[in-house]
Length: 249
Image 1 (tube, rainbow, N blue to C red):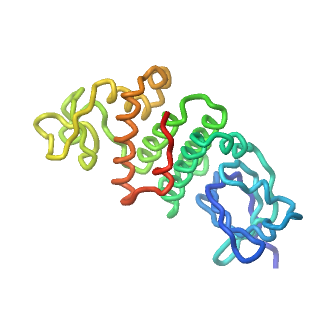
Image 2 (image 1 turned 60 degrees about the horizontal axis):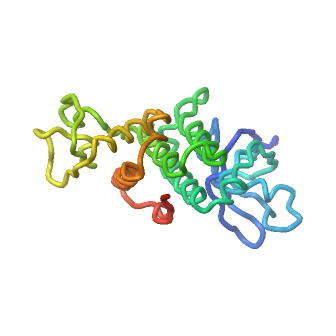
Image 3 (image 1 turned 45 degrees about the vertical axis):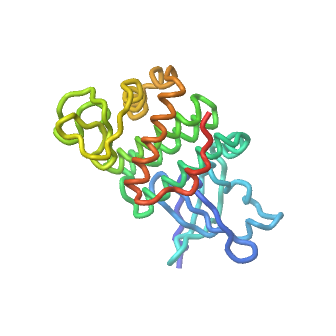
């Protein structure tokens, strides 16, 4: 009987030990969604590809489909993001939050897009690449990724028009449960006052307007980060462990 082998590109989200020498690798693949696989013997110093299976790495991986867990049979590195990301603690904590979010959002293969356009995979790849290459402030890259990943999952916030009635903005209040900006008529109890410049920054992070985002000030970034964190926690229904370790400049 022929082995059920398949090959794909993948981003390593997480690893954890199995037995004395093996590891379970959690990956977000381009064409097969989230995959959990056993990498046998990778914790031994003689392992052929242990160093290639570090979190944040982009790899070309061959797997044997198993009943419960697949088995890694071959790995080649495409983009070794791990080294550049782990060299800076602020960058590392942002990347850790990204991969934890990706794992949560794709655990049931939801919101992945199509095999021709794997949305969550491409979004995470772009965000990790931006972090590794220091293209923008780590906190901005993180908040942009979180907003866009949630939007792909069907939870796109509104930062201009009222999230409840659609009244044209800008509006000065934000309510997490309502879905973003709210007008004076729809404003529920618990809404928070948000500066206009913060709303502009949030809209820029969601739409990828990096000229606007990079020009933002520390006050707007801090307020935006708090709102993104609250919005993420509400929709994931729990606070991510890695989010509490994120360092903001």
